[in-house]
Image 1 (tube, rainbow, N blue to C red):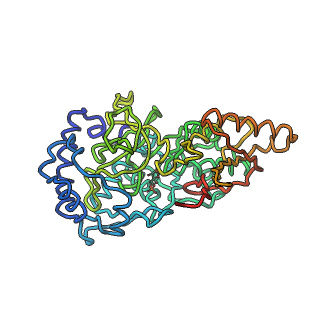
Image 2: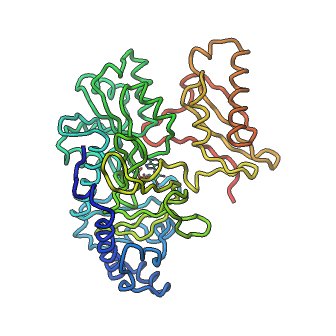
Image 3: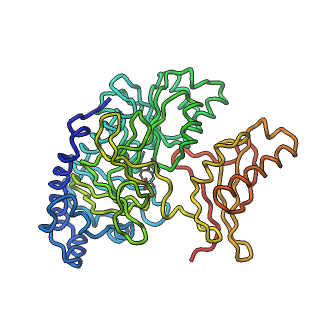
Length: 433
Ligand code: DLL
């Protein structure tokens, strides 16, 4: 279902006009209220009046994660604290967390884009939404919660974790839509199987999965294990949280809610904008946020934009699934490696489970990459010969994709730690610097 036909299906021209007007307001707000933007724009010789249309976005300087760290926690806020009704932050595994503030109007915008995302995924008033994104400072739980209420669905605010209870609730309440990270969805599916519950026979129909990178193969795996349609949802704390973009039933790219968030792709080396259809780093400018407006934010997420019309009728620009992050990219003996490339190989392989870990280290000055992968219980009980053949096959396939020789360690079922939120797939033990 299309939640807001006026906004989601307007003509490209109309939307560009709207983006232009909103961009002008945002730039003026930033310039007047945030010292950081005023200083940056002054240094670049740009005044708010120089911005006349959405195309003028190119004139503006970028904002980076480092800029946010310097203004931690509230330095980028453009509204007085008494107008800010909520604060969220990212987990901040590297350095200080990123902090976002919301006015009442920002919360309303967020609920709106989440309502669009959940509707696009299949959600409606009749759905029972088991929201297993974590509630708390993380944006996932409350973001999805407000969207679910806005569409009039029934929310089960179960949050992440307590996996067996999740399965019990799913059975007893008859949840029809599950929202969580894809890695947690997989863990839920496996736990259900161990409990003797066949999720495919339950009322569950839809999954709205995001907050971490996942591949098309993992989608297929989850869809078949759960008997659902799984769609991708993207977002980040700095822009609003979940709901910056979401997939529809076509499952062919995520509709970017570009009446609220203006996307660009840049070449991460030259920092120049590239046309739709060229892969690169995603950059977003918020168009309607009050408390924490943000201009040309470099996400470090790698994607591609697609302006072709979608058969669903929505006219938003679409972004491809995130293929990696500029800072996720491992450089192994000079070869660029994205964890998603390894995931795709593993998921195509018979005899392995979709649970893996990439361990990188330096041995005698050489980078070494080891892929740990769980084998399925059946294969594990096979003879050694079978295991050796499987290991060799994986090594060979990875070599085909990456052009790199890696070592493969087959591990027993259930030895790799399961995640209840964002999975950690890479352990880099190499000394920093
Ligand atoms: O993860 C917001 C979110 C919650 C999105 C629930 C979707 C669902 P952060 O914790 O700030 O916010 O992390 C943002 O997570 O820059 C990406 O690198 C990654 N990410 C988010 N969604 C996807 C996705 C939330 N669908 C960072 N595919 C982003 C790949 C994703 N990566």
